[in-house]
Image (cartoon, one colour):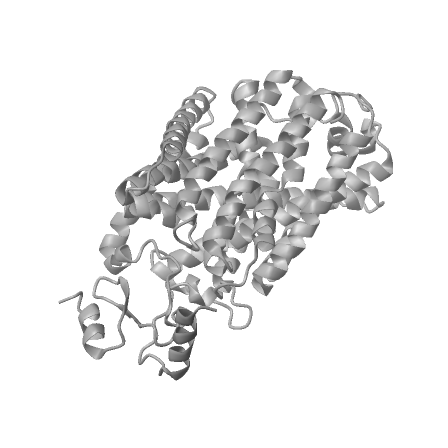
Length: 514
């Protein structure tokens, strides 16, 4: 221990507490609780890599695009990695419960932030609706394997309701409990899928297995594989929603966001290559066609169980991330302030969880009863939300780093590439869906694209004070400062300063240096 540190500790022991406490706007969630393992569990659960591997294997097995398909998946993974580089330009510098929504504000302002918020709601809610309905369907398939016949829409809807209740209860119970439980579930599912792919002989089941489950691709095969990869990796950035709750947010969140897409990309390339060599047909046939594919009852049951666990983990990941986005907006009052309510014991945004889970339940029921036949169109809508958010955060990183003077060749290249690629992909989706008369997709793009301006105008008229609170992030508190080292004050513009303990210095800082 140095002499200076000993002196500082001695002063701290003798110093009186500050007259006024300054708190972080996001402290209600419970600061500095989550470890790197918790954050990795959150990201992996939202992505549900086991399910992504199976669907990639399905397309590779059914259409056999050759090495070009594997290359497309690898290149798409690299592109998602560049998105991660753009996101980490913010996670290295601030921790926010709003994730990309809060980050875009730092680079592009209020309207773009509101647009990003709307895009994230579409993306995460869409994923939650899809995976919740799929989890319920898989559970009914397991019941059928065990001899309990539950056909029709009624049991499906009832199962969805039970899953929604479980997701809501676990999410409110606490983030550490949920992230660690779903990490174990997802790892077991991944081990099962990889083991079956490695352990079965090539072409053990006919390569036509599962093709009845394929929706019609809205574009040609290779571009569709790229879109499927992006959709399957969606949520890799969800750890960024937990910055205020992480023990070392600027380090652990950044590491999670960077490492997760690399790990998932390796798994997806493995699944594509294995399927190309004939090792994916067992998984595909067992999940989509059951024992009719030629797979044994035990293999089918194991695959169904692993996939169900992965689907369920994804619903939990989406609920945790989506609820924190709604919570952040409630704190800023761009959405009703009731969403900022936090459970007194568990320190989770219970009202936001209830709203997100209820919306997922309603959407999943509609999806199960009416929209399943149009799953390709539904996926296109979700893709619009995700690609819009990723494109905006890339462009925001360009503006943000230029403003603070910390650009590098890598950050310019990554942000420029993702911005151009994202804008081009959105244009491609809009044109192609219009040609195929899938009007819901361009309509969603138009609604999301205009949401920032419309939302800003509504807030300007009804709640103008909320426009100056957008972009809330975790900030230093009085308790973070060693007693005797200074006083934390907030000036008239809301900026925080550490000043000497003297009364004159404190008053001057609060008055903005006047």
